Image (cartoon, rainbow, N blue to C red; front, side, top):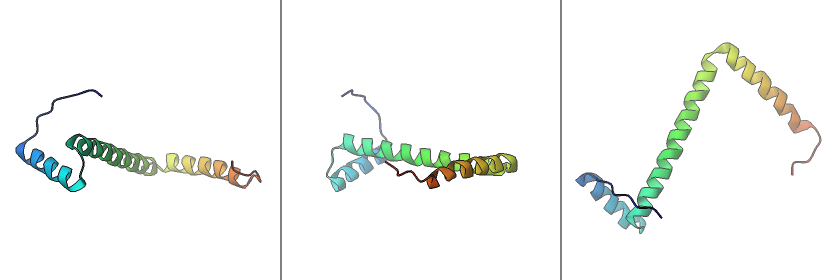
Length: 82
């Protein structure tokens, strides 16, 4: 495991201590969970932005829908999913 030193404001350190106690986890685990959750949240927000961008252009949106329908047809090809 690598180590790093970070500087937290008093408020952030206080919140980290509270969460650590409430979750009964070491502070490092709380930070790790928080970072993973932030990354998941940011990835989802980017996905929403990308979908909005795709749908903002009618031609691109139409092309996407046509391709999606073509691939959707593979669901009824009679083959069992494995």
